[in-house]
Image 1 (spheres, rainbow, N blue to C red):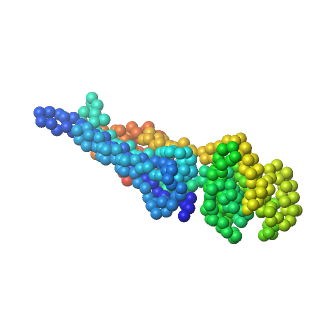
Image 2: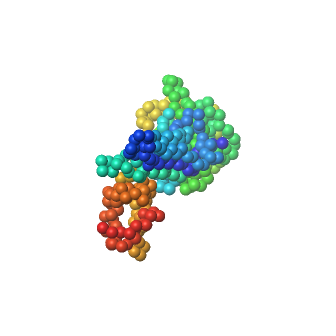
Image 3: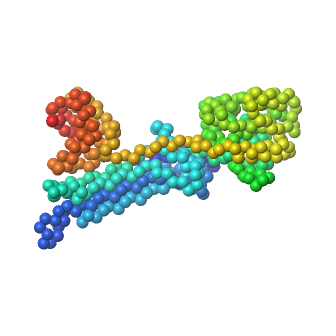
Length: 423
């Protein structure tokens, strides 16, 4: 079974909490703080697995979690780092955020590895907060929570040349003749239900990968038939061989077929509409109406397209076509078809990661920055609260509250913690 789409949930590990402990040694009067840091949570990576060629494994396992970091302990002992999680995917897989549609990784190279979710940072032990005036800090930092994200995996075939065209025009037969691929072929529509790959070796020793993309029909770009499921595979190719049936055996009009398929490509992607194309008039050995071929020749001249006439069954014209394809591939550069947006690594000092809403005389402050901040605060410790007031100024929270009209005596809630505002 070929599976080229999957939706899964990934979660990076939580950072371990820092320890708030003190030395207790015989004959040492004031031991001082010795709380160790928590371990960093495991990160989630995606790696190219050369032994995988489908996303079938992700149909049965949907949730993937990295290991949490361990808490710190006394005697300056650091918590163990959580194990990173490496998820293997086939070459050509795109990792996409299911909510925003943002591309997180494009795994198109051999042995490629991409960090998708970083693990939470470990919290600092109280040994870090000792100063000349604060010699016995009774607070530490909690570790950051790991991130959780629902993602979409899409597999796009890595082929140099793509065969496109309506069902039953002879693409699979053509592929079986020019490569060692053995697609199932029968005399009915949609006989090909998965993309087939084959390697072509030219007379000059060059080789390239060619893919038989299953039949595309009118409305494919909107999901009709197998639709977008197969259109996505064409994005990776550098050259398209547009195969049409000029035999007239099924009453098809090759000119209309070409226009229809190209409209579907344009509707799906503007880049595909400009992808280099060669028209391939197939089944000339059983052609019943020469006018169909003449009409196709006229269209090729109008659209400045090269046209080759072949018979996939007898092999007529195939050598000339393959020689031309080899020449063109030498001139066509490989494109980066996917632009991966820069990943954001969160830190405590990131601004604009909070929201302030007002209900009556109460202000509610939420967001990732607040979750990280409150995880590091010991409300029962005065020195920790001093750190809290300093950070809310750094983040711009105090300034935003004043802009929204907060006044002395109003209630300000940071998640589940409630404070009375005063200056």
